[in-house]
Length: 287
Image 1: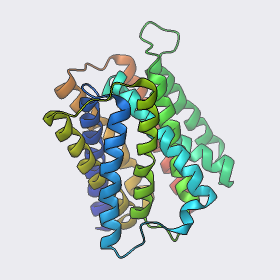
Image 2 (image 1 turned 180 degrees about the vertical axis):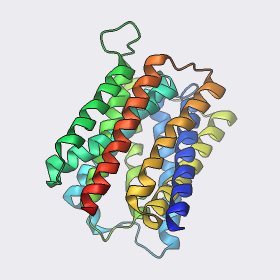
Image 3 (image 1 turned 180 degrees about the horizontal axis):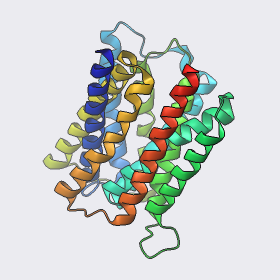
């Protein structure tokens, strides 16, 4: 029963993240990316500050200056800068497909950085998954979009953030981590805005889109955290891939996207490789 609840929460969280992406992409159509990052970061930070205080926890904790947290802060910048620019300049379905390779990078990083055992079969699945990413990107081919490399940057940042979170001081709660993660978006967006210029007063539609993105993002973050705590990690984690399904649906309905065969084939390879890696990981731990 716990695994069912965890799986449902994970699917709901992925739907929330897909909606967050959609609203951010809509907001970037009328506002500079740097400004979107600043407002989104401020809204998310304030929301997590409220949640942290409701739990009776400190907003500013000394552990925030630990090395893993500094690395995590750098990764947060990489995540939001790369992925936000990626979804602003490329189809939502393509960006989401590339993002699905994050668990593969996390497994590879855990083996290289933390010494976790990864056998030849999982290494092979990881390499096949990266081939799927190349199929979506199509480097050197007619359909290649250079801006998609920002999404790859964001995907690597997501993986680095997950690895840094593993090493983060246990004394910090997920709500506190949320504060510091969103807080990093404010100076990042400010730096981009200082370089590009073009600050604009958000209209009613853009303001609503940013508020909706923040609300769905915070709710999805809570759902993800709850899912990982309620169910077995090996059972609920594969449901992360439902994010791509939601992104494909939103891409078609909201932005009129038509994912081509290369995108769908590449996404299928990435997901199959990721699920296989998770299954092998579960069996290795049980053995």
